[in-house]
Length: 102
Image (cartoon, rainbow, N blue to C red; front, side, top):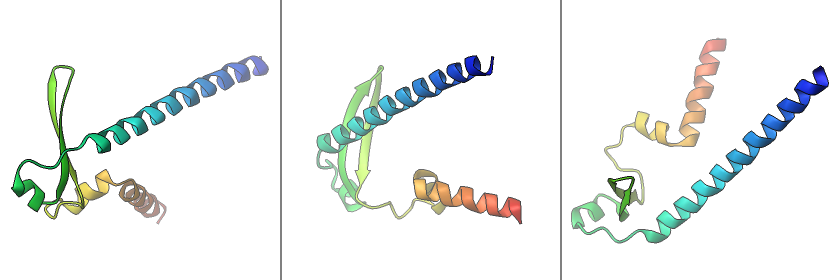
């Protein structure tokens, strides 16, 4: 019975790994396409705020206006920066774990 359960678990892990890999590659292609499709900002005020490029897109009946900043905007709170940044998320998680252990 243990070998039977192990085979099913192995199959499940392989399928999750395959699907995760496909999603990862798809996201990578999307962001490469996004970076290559950005246009110069139309509004000079956006350029002054640090916007390096923008893109209008339509998907699922919704309109999206994407703006890429060259650097993080000055008015973005530190909490939001940490929420966006993977390093910030990892650091916040590490600090939470250290507080739990202390």
